[in-house]
Length: 78
Image 1 (spheres, helix red, strand yellow):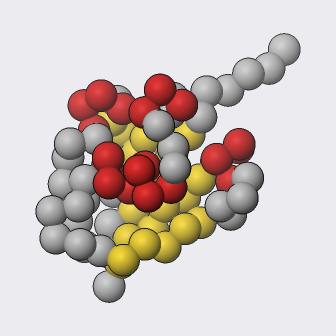
Image 2: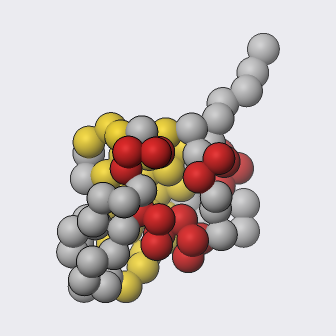
Image 3: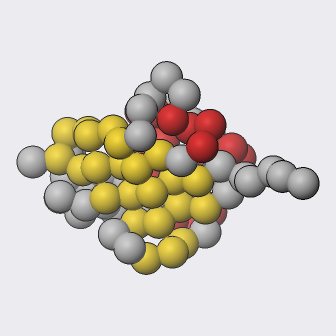
């Protein structure tokens, strides 16, 4: 069993659109972004199992087995 991480925009570069990761009991959002080489300041929004959360409030939250995350960078445009 594992977790799925859906990446958006620049986070896909060199990682792909969806990353699967082995599940470890007690795994947190911080563990996931560390594994992916992403730092919290780079993240604009993160969703855990369909629930919107702020980066500061989410990262310590424990990820569930078969869970999923969606990670979004800041959006720029004109």
